[in-house]
Image (tube, rainbow, N blue to C red; front, side):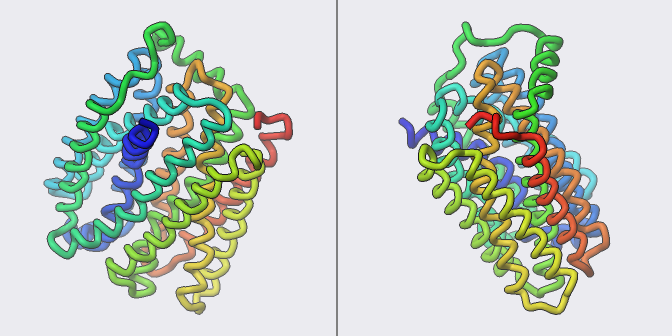
Length: 392
């Protein structure tokens, strides 16, 4: 039962990396096919991220009011349809609009999966289960670009969206038959839009919640700057093939899985706050190293890949601990709290994506600067807003 729950919820939370990472190897070809520049192509990433943010803001509070299953099933069904429509988009702007819808509907799976974990777990068990989700969710960024690269061997980038539609259909069936309702009617909140706004306001006045949520969002922004910029940097500047890029991306993603599982093993022995500080600090150091390498410009590829791996891997410490610590104090509004976490993450990610390509494909400096700035801001936020009195 526990393994089945982890697999289904992990699959649902993987909507974001699946939707973003699988078509990364095809971004240069997509731009050529639709006659669009790098910044326009990266706007399709931004549109998906914006949809993921807006969708969570809607689906989270709805799940507090209606229960977890109805909005979850509706969202996954919408994701399946939107992904199929992306495959026939005639222009980059049509694709961007459909990507927004794809993100908005897929967001239901992400936000409600986190709320279900909060419904069913407490304390150390909460941290451990989120770490277990990192094993399942972490496989998505490992496998997604590899699958995407192989799909491109057989067809075009459009085929990738058909694969995503098929994944959506499988997850709909899994959720329909494999997930029970975890929020009984007695615990549901039927206080309308004003009540939802009051709940959101209370969460935003909680210094510890905001500190954890913002630190996690800024770290996610650093990660997503890498996600948005690396296809062009590694393929256009360093000459990597789509398949080589997929392999590099997979190796980096293995770091997330490894560090996530390490975090789960240490839960109960090392305070979540301690693990979080280690992860955020390591990301800041790695971000500065990435920026230094791209500024110098003449160093070999390995000099860039090492700090990128450290940066990506430490999200395996940052994600489960920021999520668990932020949600720990708000069991009565897990859907709304989960939504705010997701909104902050994906808004920062959506804003970060165009930065990586703002100067075109001839330089990696914008990507490096964005990664370093966001990682340092995450560390600063954690130090200033979350004091030793924070829940552990």
